[in-house]
Amino acid sequence: MLIKNIRIENSSETTDIRVQDGKFERIAKDIAPLPGEEVIEGKGRMALPPFIESHVHLDSALTAGDPCWNLSGTLFEGIECWSKRKDKLSKEDVKERARMAVRKQAANGIQFVRTHVDVTDPTLIAMEGLLELREELKGIVDIQIVAFPQEGIQSYPNGEKLMENAVKMGADCVGAIPHFEFTREYSVESLNFAMKLAEKYGKLVDVHCDEIDDEASRGLETLACRAYEAGMGEMVTASHTTAMHSYNNAYVTKLFRLLKMSKINFVSNPLVNTHLQGRMDTYPKRRGVTRVKELLAAGINVSFGHDDIFDPWYPLGDGNMRDVVHMGLHVCQMMGYEEILNSYKLVTHNAARTLHLSNYGIEEGNPADFIILDAENFYDALNEKSAVLYSYRGGKLIASTAPAAKTVHF
Ligand code: 17E
Ligand code: FE2
Image 1 (cartoon, rainbow, N blue to C red):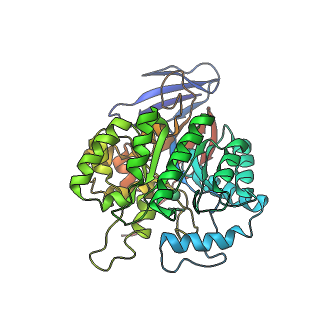
Image 2 (cartoon, rainbow, N blue to C red):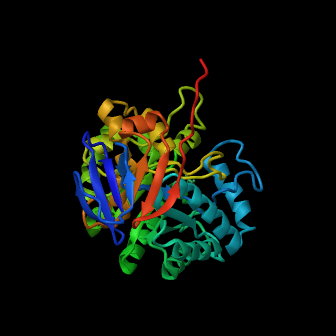
Image 3 (tube, rainbow, N blue to C red):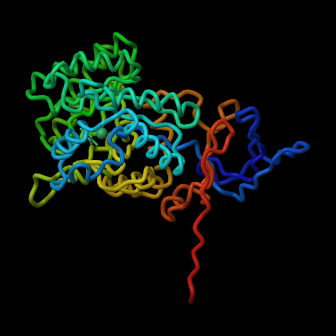
């Protein structure tokens, strides 16, 4: 297959791309078609490496309102609603909803997903379901699974055992939720446990860390310190870290030294955390999104996640990373021209680093995983809500969208 006249990322120039045996065989200007070769005219549109969803909860996807709506809009009421829904889970129910959610994601150009799966359930049924779906979709949309202790490790009956069992079953990453543990001591203990578990089994770590508007919630310093001391920083991710929004600047200045030394990754979920945080405030209301702009300026790796698709924590969402980027740029005040133009990196390259993907990117020799947007650059794509026209995985078309035709009658 030969794609003519395509722009790679935000390039001002167009090029041609030959895909052969599922790989980018050649990227150069003016490649002549081989006899019988399929030729696709790129028309100067933009090609990107596929979008990556670096933080979502597929086990709860598409359950909003069942059995109750989260009326307060808090994280904690969401956890209560979910706890009731958990009683009704079956493997087929989990697989079916998660599969529907992944199909929505794929339609929007996502090919790699990191999902958290709640393991505070003695049956571990959601974990079983997601592990099966991971196998089913391998090579089409790759799923990474985090063993996520929604109701705590130290604060939930047999929490440690459930975590270890989930890892033995095949989870890719170890999670934790320090801000939800009963005490500060449990919070520290849970992080020590998670790091040791990951080290023992050679797993990545992704912690729901300080997702609360409490400036005293300081799981992050413990996580970063353990990661630094174990030399595991690049394998470790701190998700949410919304308390950092409320930390005082003197503390943040001190903290950033450790964060940089530790080399840990961050995932911010601006869509969901602007909705969930600040709920106990009157006015002014905090935004509750971590300090993305400052983390990036310090050279720390940050990606954006959607977090939820129509579930107890978020009543909207159709798995489109563009919505996440749009909200994130606003709420983090990253609205300079270059910041908007390059914001796709938050849901592509930066996320690839967090997920430890190899051979990712439009380069000769890599698997031909890419998407084509109906725009010339990402600034326009974001502003005009341009469709992801094609999503190719290993050179095979896995999703396509016909752009809506708009007519103005004056
Ligand atoms: N669980 C949690 O602890 N935090 C979240 N943001 C979601 C689930 C979606
Ligand atoms: Fe989350």
